[in-house]
Length: 422
Image 1 (cartoon, rainbow, N blue to C red):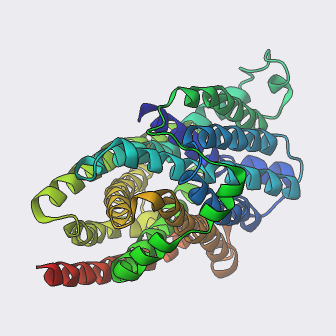
Image 2 (cartoon, rainbow, N blue to C red; image 1 turned 30 degrees about the horizontal axis):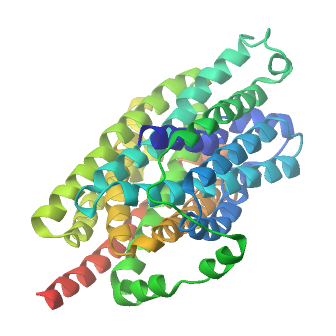
């Protein structure tokens, strides 16, 4: 679980690092906020989402530690190439490569977690893994801020090749090299059971989805709104992680080092508290009231998420960071409970594809829309880069409301299922 958590930190750091580098990249490559939002969102999200579905199915079939090695190497090379790109098109292509690698991580890891732990205690280790993802969003700001500040002060000047790069490029190359160092560690993982497969057999098993379709038919009233609620909640996640650095820089004139320390610490602290807490609460509620009672719990907790709505209009950096902390804490709790509940409803041999489907929805909706909707509101509604905070509030408030409604619909279906079982 420690290895999974470290990999999740690295993957989300590489995924979100562009949020801290918005203004340096914008000035160097001469691109707009909307183009940058595409690099943060759609360039990563589209391929990540669609390639994640077959890779999720592959995780149900092949030795998962080999798939994990492939994942880390691919996204690390993509991050290095991001740092070496000299145009919007090159950076776009490199982000696609990052998306391919990261798409394999969650399905393979969650499939192994499903084999390592029984259902009654599975939410807690799920929370540990998700903690790495949430910390990664914060560490992208904290680590990235430190590296960017160090590069700006010529601390890497003596390092061959890296020292000759502009600061934002140095940050990306260093992060990519760190991922390559981690990749061999996955060979130490234990693969429960023996997975025998052939290239001829993989094709047939990839298309054998009868059990998954049967599970969806039986539980669609719960699963569909659950997937929808988590996806729309991801719009808020990515809107906040992608544009809060720019908000703090443009509105309050904070430096990259100050943004990294403040925002990174808030995000990491919230993730460290929220995801394990969500897993522990989910396991306690499941033992006391039954697994489906977790759905109602998600709906109750997400109501507190409206605290994030005024984030773009708060008067001080401290209040802004407090709002970020509150949302990430709430989102971490809800996400952990929602994912554990969703996977419990799916058959054992389809958890990899089920995880990939969650990632597909969260990424194509959250990462694909969150950063871009904020940028479009800033560029086309308010028509000013300084209005990025107001644009964030414009997107966040209705997203939290829609998320709460969908959790309510799922809880109604779960209540009907429990009543029918009784």
